[in-house]
Amino acid sequence: MKMSAKGRYGIRLMVALLKHYGEGPVSVKHISEKEKISIDYIEQLFIRLKKCGFVKSVRGPGGGFLLAKLPSKVKIGDILRCVEEQIAFAPCVETKLNTARCVLTDRCVVHGFFKRISAKLEKIMDSTSLADLCKFR
Image 1 (tube, one colour):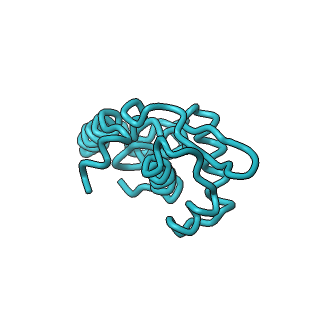
Image 2 (image 1 turned 90 degrees about the horizontal axis):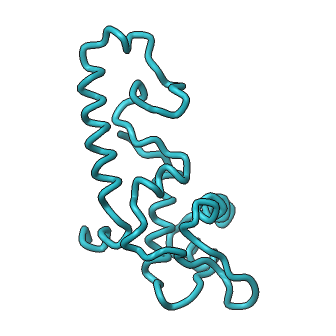
């Protein structure tokens, strides 16, 4: 599985908010400087994360973004799906409209194996919370 920039950055943005959890909103500028992600890209991802209920915004001086849920309740798989990332080992097992379906899927010997790997990846992502990421450091 090769995760796209959307997926990687979506997780990184949530971790950036986690680092300031309980301290109030974090500005997009601060996150951009620390994470080396453009302000425009951060804002695009925060729009998606806000629609999914993972973050909330605070306007005005001292405003920014903060986590809308407890870090232990935010699953990595949910973050990835929110920013439109597929959790699949190979394109032939992606579920989003089956757009990447291979013409050989019905007779492919390894397709079932790829599906098993994808299911395990999804299980790991769905059982790992934002708070759990701190343990991997």
